[in-house]
Length: 309
Image 1: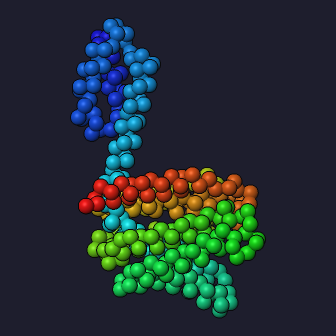
Image 2: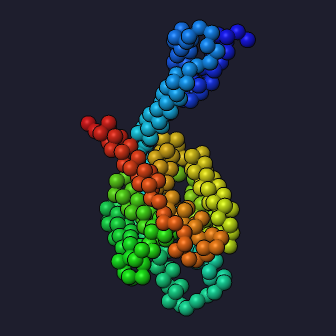
Image 3: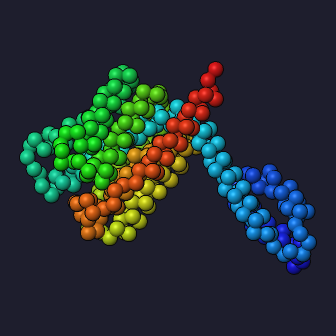
């Protein structure tokens, strides 16, 4: 292999950092420019040149990803979210209810309480079929109550502990997200037009599977819990991506990522030696949640301004 051929091969490897669409459009032109500027007989790109190509490729990938998010079908993504949140939460709560009912029936008031939780989650989307704005207000009230409880506003025993309880944090964030989706979209009626039977199946199986697997994680090593939780989230994301139209799926997955992160970290944290006591588990780092929420808000803001008359 000649020196020029070797240099070209190395440049092509570096161009792999760029998105495929970018390489198809500009790849050959970039190779020509790079080969013309390369020093004769060097045999490989310089360190500074390689760094510049890698940096440019990563920047191009970030910009391409941002454009895909900004071009997502946000009205449909929000409509889907108004249904996805309660379906997943209902599957999770009912599966856990049946699990604990199998172990210990408990007092009648405990069963009534669990039934009221199920009703509270199901009420807003059902109410939204006829009264969407009223349903959004009810959803905000329910989500606000859970958020106050999660933040320790009811019991002083929660002081300094709430941040470790990712189950309630994730649930309150999900309910707030569902309330916003009800207020800013076509709601369940539009979602029913988009969702296919396979999409409904993915959402139902996601919630039920999380509720069934959760107790299984209590006595497992943290690494195994992490593999199970991450694998399940990947399967759910893949199922939604395959059964929901692409532009709406991108927005929906980003919206669901914000409340899913605290719950996933908490599910891993209660495994192994921690058990029910998460006080020994490091405080949740909410930077990813804030990042997901910020990206969704920025993309939605850009979409609204681009489509404004």
